[in-house]
Image (spheres, rainbow, N blue to C red):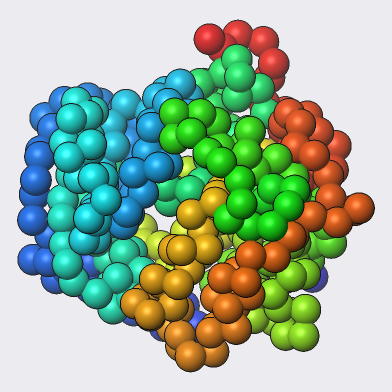
Length: 348
């Protein structure tokens, strides 16, 4: 019997309801940590596609981030800056489709920014298709070059589907990390254009039914001896949001639990996309030195010192098994995403 077909006990159902309410209460309390810098939310119209992002020092990624998601049809960006000092804030203040908040509170203590974004989703995202992505994540899906996210959302609505899942695909350069050049106005996949086609493994977890996908280059390069500690690669970044919903761990999992079953991972049959992960831009070496000292990115930072050290050493992640990035069709052929019947006709 599939996990989604296995009934929960009343105790499990009660605990999940209680967990969801606690997460929403946490997010409600976290609103006091946010200071509004620019509020353009009056421009949000019914049916607008909204993007929610927490960031710190991402000025080199922001130009293409906005280009990519505006091209896909995102109407408004709700962003929380966590203490940037690289010019990100002045840049964001110039964007007419951005509402910006700032906080210097602990990223780790806020569930890695999730409390802040859940509050903003609760306040502004109800009944909208909302996208939760980091500045180093570029969502693609079948026919994304000809169909906007509004087309995708309308198709999902017609199918009665509430979420759209994606696998995070780590991209890397050929050559030692930190030695490349990158123009912030350019597509980061011109610099990072290789990936591991596999292996990837997926399993569902009880009681939430959330998928757990691991594997790929970071596991190969940094967690070969402890693969169970390698990063979680599954996300459900696009959701028709409701105030009773809550993400649990980044957007890897969500409550109510039915949200987790609408994505079945690499090799699955449901419609899904890929989040192109541009972590390994040349700045990653210096940023890793900083983040190792800040200790904000893991529940137990001491256990991941070797991970940071591995990146700081500037390894060459490329091997003869690496695959050069092509189009979305290539990723579908490799089983990393699925069109799921999303039609090629119509669109832009």
